[in-house]
Image (cartoon, rainbow, N blue to C red; front, side, top):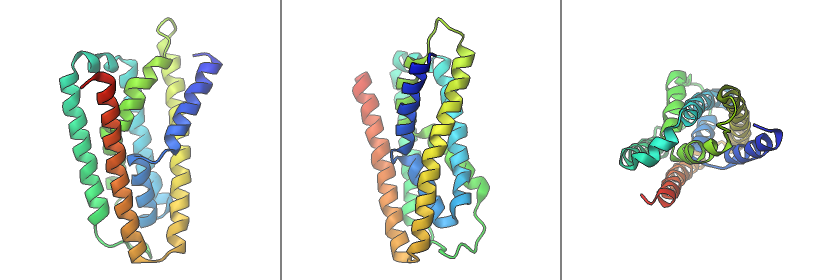
Length: 208
């Protein structure tokens, strides 16, 4: 991976990390509910799932997706169902404790981050469709994969930290149950719309 290929790759995933989607909405709502540092737990889970996606992309799963589109259609459908379930819990979950007196369910937050990103159709677009184009099969794959993992992790965490910090500051300023409730519902809707649009993009690209 040359410097200019890496620079283009970095800009692509930096823009992706700053684009609101299911992962961003999960971290944003966690930050409002639990605070900035607690929101970093699902953010770490999302980054761990990204490493799995990169490993799959490097091992040629994108080729299998084209060879067996029906199987991957099932996976995409399951992914949408998981995100819709998370969105429902976000929109209609228990009232937000704006005083944050209850300890956050850290293990659950982490697993939600991992599960959401593994099921995220946006990840399928980026890692299944775009990432393999940056790999040069004529060069050693291991350094390319390691560079990709480091770059994606930094870009993803940067975007998630920006959103978590902003939503934490927003929650501190607007100590309102009504504000939190409607914000969560809008965030849940954004999660579903973003995931649905990603599925549409993969359908349009493959014809299925």
